[in-house]
Length: 124
Image 1: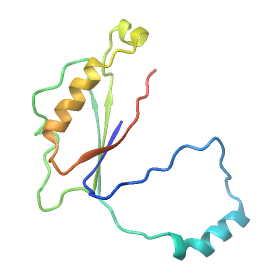
Image 2: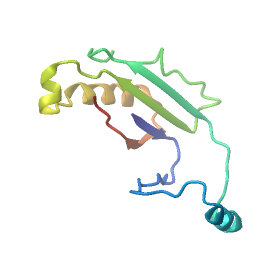
Image 3: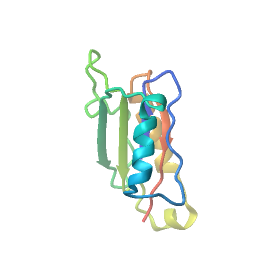
């Protein structure tokens, strides 16, 4: 899965922690008290899409799929690609040729203001 942002300022994504506290009223109260000092909230529009690649190479352009209204471009784009390469050897050698092809095709198709913020690779 790849996350794109149109923001010119860095986007901080929280690193994964080995632990978390769930439903701790004391922590919730402390966080609520500090919210105004440390938090700012803004509305954001997000375009989220998945596509089953089915092991095929990408088309030259994906404009039919990723065609955005220039008046209302999303703040973030999240694209999930499934079944990138179905060959057995891919899982043994961790080959990323198909993935690289698709990422290049997406970069060509997305408006130039977007850049990759984070990319996650999940396999079987």
